[in-house]
Image (tube, rainbow, N blue to C red; front, side, top):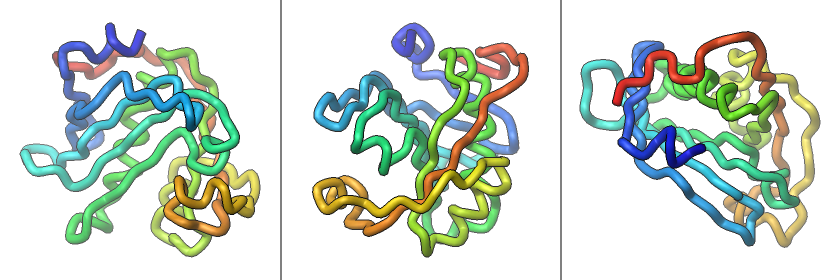
Amino acid sequence: MLKRLFSAKPELLGEGITLRLMESGQRDPDSGIQAGFSFDICPAGKSRAAGYVSVRLGESPELYYLGHIGYRVYEGHRGHGYAEKAVRRLIPVLRGLGLHSLVITTDVDNAPSRRTCEKLGCALERVAPVPPRHQPACMMSKAKCRYILMIDGPEEMLEGLEI
């Protein structure tokens, strides 16, 4: 289904940003990632990326600490809500993939990312100590906040998708 959705390198428009597909079909069986995709986050009308958002699909002990959604906003572009807007823009696609909830993890001391999760309406499930064997995949973090993002409500999967 991901190949069908993203074979033509679409852009997702809305929320004052453009998400440009950079990679799809990402797999890492060792990490439990069955499929994934990443988008550059571009402010509306701009061609240069302000950051990126990635989705990792699957379940495994490593994904428990990595989470299903990851994002990064580059220095100089922070403070505009780009990560929150990017995740919101992906919700119709995630819903269309049949997902009902996803995990976003963040470091305990990453206050901006924690605020992003709160603005998205995520529920803090717990602060999980990261076992040493999973720390390299988690940029050596010793603990991760696990937030649950519920994906509810009817919306068309491809709403706003321009190919």
